[in-house]
Image (cartoon, rainbow, N blue to C red; front, side, top):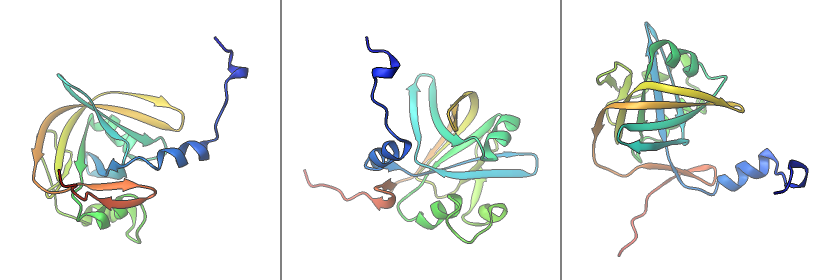
Length: 171
């Protein structure tokens, strides 16, 4: 077994450039506590297991979502349909809408936990915070899914540093 000095290393830029080639679904992850709400656009969300229903989402440590999710013990993952690119841009901080006004974009409701849920989300996964851990610059939140709402449509994707939509391939 090679020691650490013999292992090749890569730069953060090379790593993110390589992973930008993957196609990922786009979600807005939200939480609330008392009269405060926080949300952000992510492409780093995935299922962990089905029984119990657990998912994970990765969030930069500097995002206020981390503090509010800890305080509330809840969050929601809103998987966006293909027509919600503008909303994804707002929650990614890539629009002129200030952070404190993000929830003025879209129509929001809630399910079991009270975390903000986008009414026209392709899928809304309502979660209780199961646990979390810090790795590098990010925090990985594990959520126990306690409620789900689905609609029909095509998902919004992110690949090659841009948004994309599914183009069905004939079988």
